[in-house]
Length: 102
Image 1 (tube, rainbow, N blue to C red):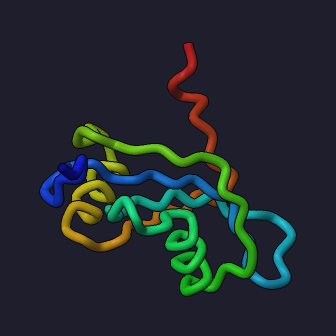
Image 2 (cartoon, rainbow, N blue to C red):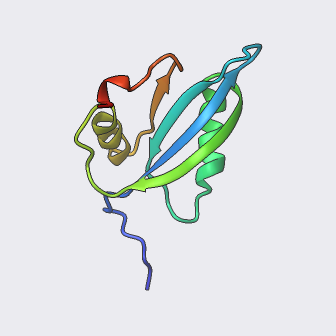
């Protein structure tokens, strides 16, 4: 009996620092995708980043989303991943979430 459910709402969230050729500062990227258990999520992520022009990447976190997020950009990314596509969110490094601190 298999533990996998093709209709599952589980989406992988992979966070990485990625560098384009010749750039010294990384771009923080969040990738959301659905994957079969036998598929290598790390290898798939590295291939996606390479196809987007990144020469090097360091994966810093891997997790799963099992429920629909409430806020953007993760809400759109989650829905994109559920449709079978890959969502990639890029952060330029200058973004700080200071407004959430009290």
